[in-house]
Image (cartoon, rainbow, N blue to C red; front, side, top):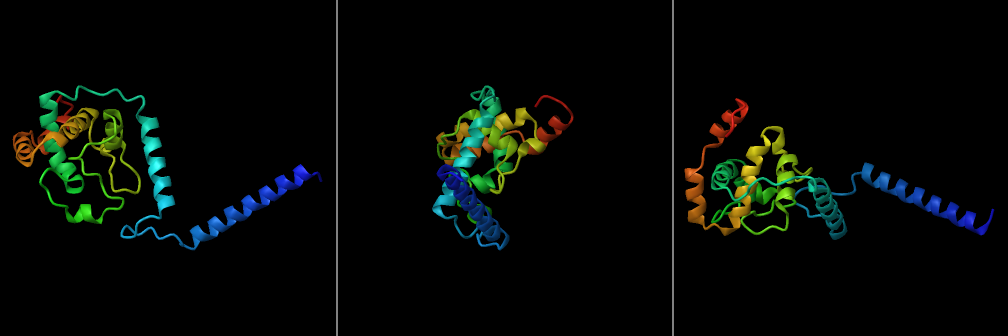
Length: 186
């Protein structure tokens, strides 16, 4: 066998040993997946990178709705209060039991985001595995989800009082869901 052939054989054996060791470690449960124990930095970096690149790649084809429409923002306020604030909080809201127990932590959406509207829509519609973020597209149509995104884009500008007023005056979640289920425009 040539030197190049021996090197490739050695690389192949080394890869098989690494894969075998990884399989044994996984099967033995060596990595702690408990939500109250943070990931190691390399694992956190890997998961964060996979998440960010996956969202960006899948959201490329999403065409945003009109996110400046006051009616859309108002509808989104009620949806957000019912569906999102328990984890993502709201202006003046203290961390909830749910938000404290999530790992990775749910982003506080009252702060600015680096996600585009298309990426936010994709996340709201499809959720994110192993984070507690549900796929709202299973139960909500795209119009309702764009309402949520429109509101979330506005959220960082709101004071506690403005948030509360918007939510108080918003159409109720149940009403919007009934309209959606009856096939009506909400």
